[in-house]
Image 1 (cartoon, rainbow, N blue to C red):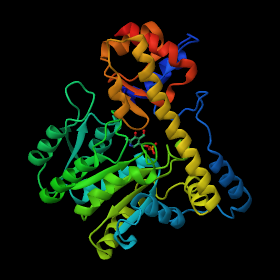
Image 2: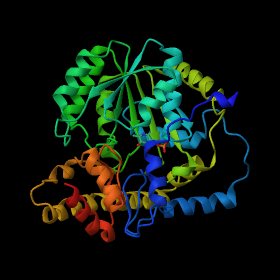
Image 3: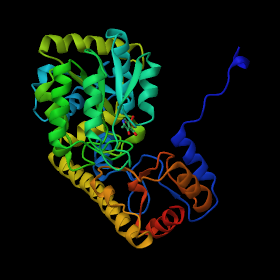
Image 4: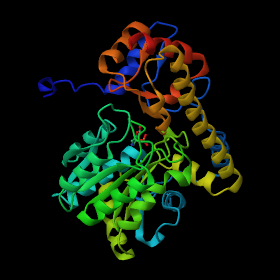
Length: 394
Ligand SMILES: Cc1ncc(COP(=O)(O)O)c(C=O)c1O
């Protein structure tokens, strides 16, 4: 039977990393893949994670299954961290999921199964996996505009107009809580307020993807948009992840939170989420959730995590400014200062697909075709050759 199958296309971003690994150029630079890298270009295990793992190694008493919804302590911490007391815990149903991707897929299955008339609206552009995840669950997927014509900042008027006229009551609007991937362009507080007004008045359900809490301005600051939504919208879904802010990429630690009008509706929502999880991966992996819960249960380890998260955030911000500054010398006619307003690991460089292609073929600099760069991949060592290469293709 398998001889009738045709090959699926490779993943666009992971395919670039494979090409990077094959490239023999010793000066090659990879700014494509979405992981944090330190000043030496490594993706380290956080010290708070190592300490928690040491404790788990000594104290862990069982590897038996977790409940369908995951580790209770972990779920309690997710609720505190993501919602920061903005709403009562009794209105939130949290399930631990395999990463943020797992949370998005559980949300997609939930919507496709229980609200089948709903369309899913996402920003154009968005993380490439978003439309694929929702389409795979059988949802109709539509887009709303996001960037201005120079692709350097938000076209808020166009975004709001589209949300006002496109989706119908009962549709779902996917928003990035902070550090928009791939652009790094986030709405301001005032803009979040207006988005919340439109969603609430038009009966649209916000689905908030919160993959980078703490990478923008801080844990609380990055939750501000979500809080403003919660002031107006009684029902919200949030897909969150500890892949980036705890560096737990391969442990697959995420959560889907369903905010309902009251505790009864939250309980019904939870029963449906559990049914969906049971027929998918049955129950989540223990280790990553136990690491997060161990850190957040301990004041000293939590303090260490805050420090390490701040180090990551500050390094990214430093590299962003260093790149803009260095480009002033290398390409004085081209202004890259718009990058300074962008937040998080990614930025839209404004480079076009031809320039991106030349960066790869002539300079062994790998960035995504849209012009997205992973700012965390820039180091003091590769800054100079990177800027020379960008200047050469402009
Ligand atoms: C916007 C966005 N959402 C979700 C995810 C999924 O993260 P995870 O690795 O936790 O599945 C990512 C990861 O790159 C992302 O960029």
